[in-house]
Length: 105
Length: 271
Image 1 (cartoon, rainbow over the protein chains, first blue to last red):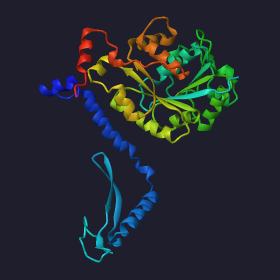
Image 2: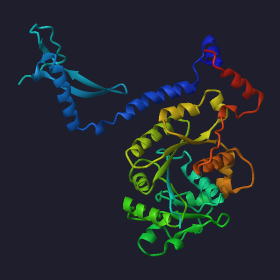
Image 3: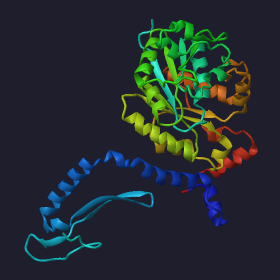
Image 4: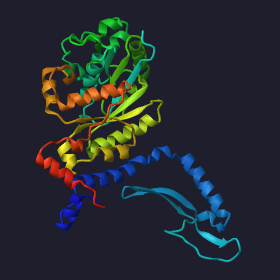
């Protein structure tokens, strides 16, 4: 914090516009840099399979209901994985996480 | 015949940040230091490099004519009268129907490489075909940006594309810097821009009214005798490009008035 920031804070003034600019820029670039086109469906499929392989080592997953996708919201892109768990490999039913309406086939 | 021609792309993504002005001034400064230099205007839809150099009335042929074998390369090159080491080559004509392809640009830059130490390619704004054509002709790049949100964002896009190419090194030039605004923290600082774009810094150029005046006259600042902040910056950039170790100016320490000194005091980090 600089002397100027301190005085601004004491006087209840806004922070300098350079700070605001830097913060806005960092946010918008975080979004821009995730180039959705570089994650092709092939790559996404491969990643989905690897994630499932790892998780399946520890718990039994309901493969029918698995959903792994990229979602963009509020300038951020997130990898959202919905992996309903049937049971842990010790056999005990722990919990079942299932967001949204289950697909029926 | 120069062995290791340096073919440098001057690009920015956003328009109006000072690519063409930099190309003209850097071209003159390099030529003035004794290096044979060609400036290639790759923006043929909206070409302006000729205007900044004051050569607009002397263009007869373009690179396109050279490729079409309508003329020889040295007929298309426009030599600068006051700086004979500098020559301009417009890529094409605004009325041209067929756009050049990356191979065409590559061929032109190879032809220029046989004659010149430096080839500066003034890239069109945007990240579309014009930019990609210019890119394919170059070995290194200078990304020009201003300390402004939109310019930095667009520069980031361009850097993303350059990083997937063979171009190396990619260096950063921060143009139109206003020391007073930076000291007041009303403008992104050099450190901010550099850390966000994470490129090595080639230079800082201060905002300077003389740039507009010299454009009016068609005489790049680096050609004039007078002193001006931007002229000094351009010359520093040209020397750094040639491998000399020139210290960077600190815009925050540029102002000499009492107010500037007070503002610097206010920048003191207290915790």
